Length: 288
Image (cartoon, rainbow, N blue to C red; front, top):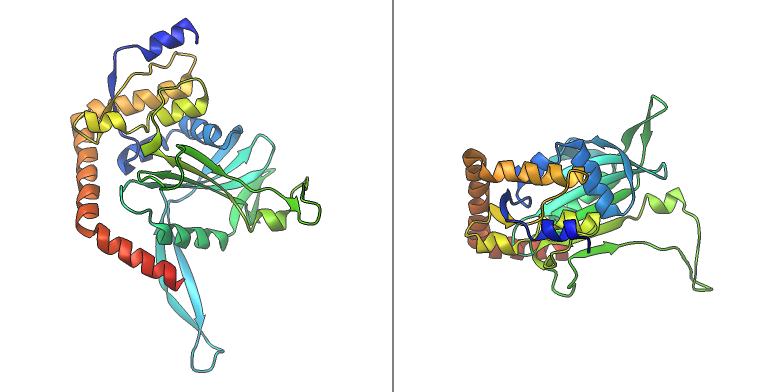
């Protein structure tokens, strides 16, 4: 390990805000340099362009009239909200729709809600600008889940659930990609913040997830802020932007109070209604 990096790791800790909360995560995602770095680090490939999409959207459902099976009846619009949604252009020249969901609660992961908005996105065509011309396309989807809870059987902090093409007769990998398959299946990336323990700052991904590490938040006595030791160098521009933004939010009294209020609200909801929500989620999953 280089001497300057060792010195950065051993530098005096400073306060940063907890990015797992909406107030903080939203602020980070307002900076395009941070967004590109965030996505590139997780996806493991360079993201060259980002078009941020509305986070709230409606989805209208239709069902057949049960009396004669012919007339469509409109079911009221459902409103979905995702933490971050964007269309990206990768270095390979491929367009992808990225959905990021941050699950702050320490209770059971809200699988039913994830499935709802994922299903709505599969049925939505997106507008992509190619050569200055708007084109309607059905884009392949990539999901990123940042979980405050721990998956029981998965012990690693960063998990990629990828897809491979395999010839079933020969059991050999198939090269190439087809739009039919790409638009009906998707890769997922899962970050379990409760399992981030190593203080490593070698790769872009290690540096990024270090700000989500939760142990120091609890030790600090407040879930809104934490003590953080890594001091990015001036050349590490994106991490410098991230830590500066988080530090400013963590030391500003008004912003810190807003984060603490959100943390208290999440904790109260989970303590008061967590059991009922988990029972309802399990019932809905069983019905599906």
